[in-house]
Image (cartoon, rainbow, N blue to C red; front, top):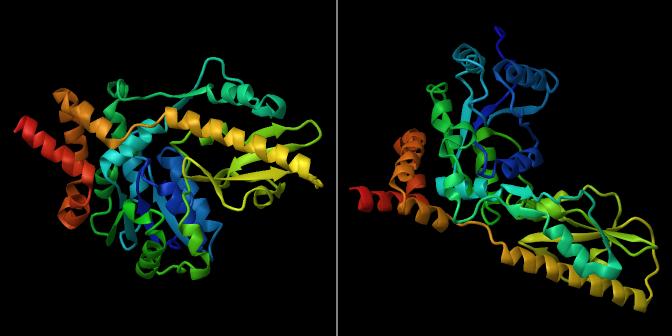
Length: 363
């Protein structure tokens, strides 16, 4: 790994998991930024990935990502990998309130039951039982009573890694991004600012709705439920979240519902694979069954609410050992951010509550 990387990349993006990077990646691609996650590769394979990305996209606006730290086989390999980057390139560093990130990673752990069956076809004549059978195949791994089972040191591998990475980019110009700024209400303006700073294509005002939609289903049961197939014997209707749909079938959502249908804050669509003439009787039957299905899913999700930041803070208020561990890991990772953008840290509600709690309980 003695070759330097080709020079045709504009910036390096440092981040972590559970902070919204998948959504921002989609926004970048919409603005003609060629950027791809390399997966959990080690140093040499990651270099090869970046090298081929740049060589095969010589005329594109390219950016490189680093979202993992502990995938290097040894220190020599790590240092060789980071030496391949030019200090002249700008750096984008993503951050988020650590407790919102921890909440996300805990809630993303949805596990299959021991009775898991792959089939997701629902018989329309027995919709209640069939739907409940599918919903009960999944459960959340963590709840307010077993947060202690989560190993906080995992945070240093894939989430709170910015400080580990920044030591290799000390002389680079840096843009510190609070990932709260890519929430639907802020994303479009944020991409305009990033486009100006990094000189890539600005988002189109005609495309504004794209930036105002949720992009990730990582913490919701919907990621595991969908797509569902509603079987009417003579035909089938596919039900899916908008973010997950890759179907080439006809979208019939507007045929049955004047208003958009949402479950767990995600828009739901309905698809069919052949043209059908719906008489009034069949139309009423289909709509009734779909509404029944939506009601059952919503009810089940409401009964299985995810953890919130307050649950994590409450747990830490009762356990000094783990409180100290979290404080040490989090504060180390915020060293540079506190020096350059203390305003971002000050805006984080739950981190501020955690700091206050530690001072009150531990002095």
